[in-house]
Image 1: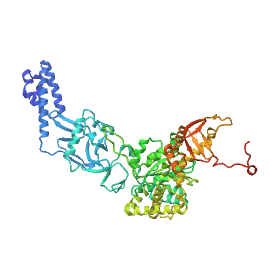
Image 2 (image 1 turned 135 degrees about the vertical axis):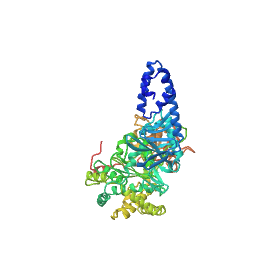
Image 3 (image 1 turned 90 degrees about the vertical axis):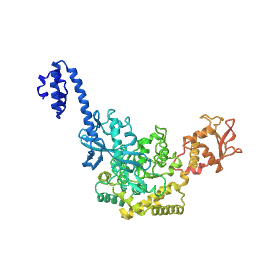
Image 4 (image 1 turned 120 degrees about the vertical axis):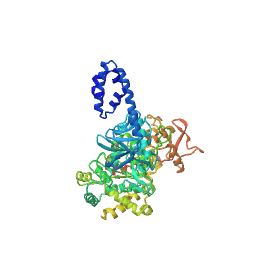
Amino acid sequence: MFIENAEKLDEDSLLSDDTFIELFEIEDALTRQRTIFKLEQRATKLKILSEFRKILRIYEKEEKKKNAAAFIGTDEKLAIQIPEKGVSLDAGCWHMDDTGIYSMTDKGQEYACPHPIVPLGILKGVESGLCKTTLLFKVRNTWSTVNVSRGLIASAQKIVGLSEFGVQVTSENAKALVKYLNDMEALNPTVIKEQLSTSKLGWINEQFMPYSANEIVFDNDPKLMSLFRSIHPEGSRDEWMNLVKEIRQIGHIEVLIYMAASLASVLVEPCGALPFIVSLWGGTGLGKTVALMLATSIWADPKEGAYMSDAKATTTAMEIRLDALNSLPMCVDDMAQISRQHDEDFSSIIYKWCAGKGRDRSNQQLGLNPLTKWSNCTLTNGERSLITDSTQGGASNRVIDIEIAQTMFEDGNKTAKILRENYGFCGEEFVRLVQKLGRQEINKRFDGWVEQLKAMAKKLEQEKEDKQIIPLALILLADELSEHEIYQDGIRLDPVRCLDFLKNKNDINENKRALEYLRDKVVEYGSRFEPDENGEYKSGCWGAWQNDSELAILPTVFSEIMSDGGFQAEAFLSWANRQNLVRRDGKHLKTKVTVNGHRIRCVVLKIEKNDDFTEVTKEIEEELPFDLPQ
């Protein structure tokens, strides 16, 4: 034995093959290293350390090649197994132990990841057709799963993005990790299966997420995890139902409509309707937030930061949320938070939320991202009406605006506490009911409600827009179904009372509202249309009365007034012409008249100068309960 007497070895013996063969027969790594130290000490004394280390390196390389060949060429079938997760995969040339994932090469062990990680499945988006891979990994003794795009794990440059989810990947092991994950999918096609997936809630191919069977799996987007996790039953159904029946027994119509509208959201898509908004408004302390919590608790956790949306969220964030909710209602508390941002005019927000789809957006590849879409109802509240005089007619049509008459809850704090602890039962039951009845029956009942509401409006000599009748029909249908099958308390919404919440056609007609707005401005700025006794316009000239029934308005002034009121000048002129309210000049809708001594082409409207005024005679003045200003 050469090595046992290392201190006695001469130069030839120390550098001989027998010494190195005996050295590499030592299997224990620690013992081998200590022996190398002894041999190096002897080589130093003999002044041949450099030669010894060169030969040592050659033997180390040969040893690695021999081990790699033995490992790669083995007939044993390697497998990656995680019994506690039910995972068993064909490993190919890959090995997994406590140190991570590695393969043997001629350079020794090449690590793909310093901890266990395996692909579980492939998710193919129902809407987009794009694929994701579900990864299972263990870091700090904790198992986690994440769905990531295929592009992310197909590139060594991009796969380092997995570090954001906790995977320990760097630029050093990125290439090996890409190869490992690709090998696993190629070697296990029957285990790593492709499934349809969706990141949207509500109706998906006749199924309803998250209450569907296993044909479609849910793709949990990390950015919306709090929303997705909030939709589940919690607490006691009986306790929730007892509270709801007490509230329904009190009979506040605002609460009943809110609850029915929350359920009606899932009827929008099956009935081919457009998204709509139900808004409650009134002073503080009337229970607006508690009412919204009640409507939310039908589906999900009503606590702050869970299902309900923040009114101050950006337009894009709201669009993404609507896309995810899809069929479920969006609940937005306290619109007063953003009223100043929109100058009290929510027309743009209403149009966006009720459009049913977002804007086209390009991606980095100069293509288009998948379009966001939704078919649902939005529930809002605030201290002021969502509809104002400046709200455009089309926006008004999409909102059922309800003023709260009185406090809606006897004990709001107690109600809120019960709702935070018990929720998520009624929504699933309602969906099951809709699925049981089928779309054909649902549409038949919906059409019946539409015709019934039209007949009621006609009988009451009211003109209602179809765009408002349709959402009310959905609400009344949801109220009918839920009372008959779920609440079973005999309390139903009164259709006639509900009709009162809908705007009449004349109230919504954009051009009639524009005409009233214009008349108001003429009265407010009367001195700018009539000169004083000296024939001067001291406040500036906006136009002039041509006679007691015709008013000429300077074109620039007319356009500015219309724009300030949120109306379209040319559209109004076209309507006014059809109503014979404009003096024409041949084909022109603007006529040359004399204003302030100048001949100029103006908008000449046919309106009565004193139409809204009554001359106060001496007899009338004596009967007034107040003194007229002198």
